[in-house]
Length: 355
Image (cartoon, rainbow, N blue to C red; front, side):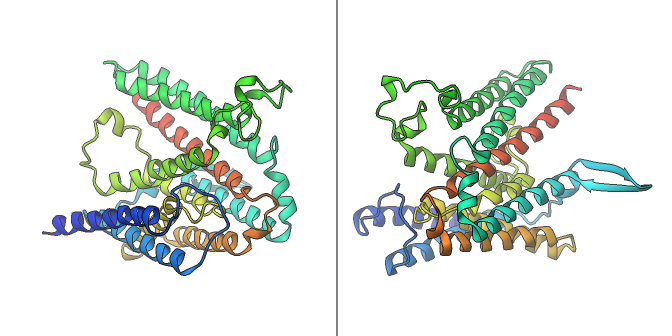
């Protein structure tokens, strides 16, 4: 009976979401993909409320599939440091999350203090872009090494090997696209084939910038946040073990939540709001679990607070951006960080299997 109720709750959430897409297209005349300043008219407020409720139904339905408590923080590596005679122990996952949340706070405070400085960091060939490209390149090399590790495991699992190679190629592509295949770095003239490129650069994604960005952001949310949540709640998900090996752990949900709050020009998109509210409800679910089981919940509370406050800041003061879209550069920056941490996670899993 409970499973039937859970499935119905999930179905209702998804069905109403599809209905809203139809209303957007035929009644509200709102395109699926568009970039404008956040709108707060009656129609857009109605859409936000519906997306909020659909997100709640979906997350609540998935969360209620089983009642087990997974204390995944304790399953992570520990860093031990001797300092002035004291032996200090750190949970590496919590340390990583703390680093990313503090850096995110820094950039948000920088934006409030000096939108110009915030913009400088995100310029083409700047710190944010180069770091994003570097992290994606490192992730690609990590997956090349993961391929080597998996290849050594007998009997050979071709699906695992192919998947690792695919991830490596995808991350290499993202890294090269981020720096326009070295065009600006090496001062290479624009080829005739790229004259229709929206930014006049040697890359593929700027032939359809809005579409590619929405796919990248939504896809990152599904893979890094929604999928691990579903799999953690329902381990019997009908996925071959060779592919289930690559599903991120719940820790990646917390690390990935940092990039979810970087929205302004695409906030009106149904998929962006759905990503934000689903992430919020997933984190709230884990918070309630931690409180109910008398586990540490302070870091989760900080992550939730940061998610809400940062998104509010960018929505309210986003008109101060020097470039309309520059918050997306920071979003891509933290997506790259999350995929890098994910790559390390798979690397350590592969290493333990091959040893």
